Length: 588
Image 1 (cartoon, one colour):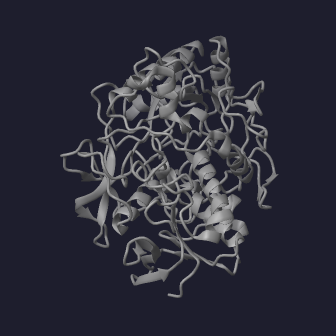
Image 2 (cartoon, one colour):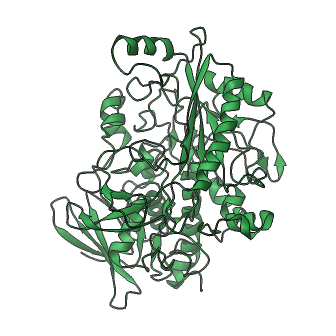
């Protein structure tokens, strides 16, 4: 097909951002989205979208695993098996990707997340970091990213309370956050009852709780692109669902509306990208090969390729395309697939008497939630703790849907009249406090192509080699104990806790988060990373890769805010420099 200036693979958050930035710059752009077209007015209409069985259980907005999935094993040398039923994480599909059905927590990374190895070595000595831990700095300072965090928050109408404005700590906000240039675009919703109880207990223990930054608009809001959002009504249908009120920030509600009708943008849906094409020397991309909705193989020429699909698919596309050297855990050499990480989550549940009415159906992905950040990143003294990293601790309710969100004590019957009695006793009188823990990267945790299993088109599936390390088990034990202290101070009748224990392996059957990271990481030189600081592939400079695949290790927050900031940061450099020179933006 006729060559264009740029091809973008994927039409989620980063694909939508780059489509706007590149078409604003006057480039001709083709977007290849593997799934169907989805929009609020046609696909997220109430009451059809409020169908828990269709969306939260059967995953109508998720990638069908029968055609393509990943394989999983715990350690090198084992045989991986396919991930055939959704559990641990969810893969998006169609316009908006996972951004269409995410929850809406939009955090900034902590400044010390971005230079993690330097921070720990400077404060605790080089021996503090285990020898098999492969964490590294981004090579980007928080101050450089701050304007782009700020812009992405304004695009999404994020509601919250600033904790640090230009170095001045603010009452009611997160005092551990990096200095910001502006307050949040919107004020938060008042905390729901579960969050009120959490906040009161946390304050009694000496902490300073604050509202979770919510990309759930709390008021009528117009973003910098002129797109209007409506106020959230706490309907309880966020994760797994599109937002029928135009309240939850998603590509459909914040960016894509301004792209419609642009003559220099074409979006092709049901277009399954199979390879980034390279010249004979393998030094420049010439386009993308994909399979269209009719099953035909198509080659779209382009002067620039933007890989903006989900983290796992970004890595798979690089490996299938022969871009960069695949990572080898035996030698530690190679970069593509290196430093895969996930998140470690725990929950502590409080069961109250029937005089405490939680109204669990009143909830949203982030609005009305409260948190403390005292035990995340390096916000506390790690000396003698025996681990690197930490966790966010937060409370609230995302909804009270009766199939998935039915919290019962572990000793409650699983069926019959006993189950019914337990539901009546606990459904409206229970709340939960969660920890969202960071996970470090290790030499033996990585992604590569599976030698056995293939997708519906005959291409190798991506293979994940991952299990928990002692560092994360120690981290979650420590932070979960802090969460339990807060829950006890909430004075429930009884509590239960789910914490991953030493000896337990990573279980793909249990959902934790869709916060998969790494595999195409940012770094300071071509020997330790796939990408330079502007998300440009070292080896093929007209290919840019966006998404959480660029994280050298995982953080104790939802990754979306950092993903957006890194994308806008790179887009600014692409527009100011790359489009003029067409070469490497960093020489190393």
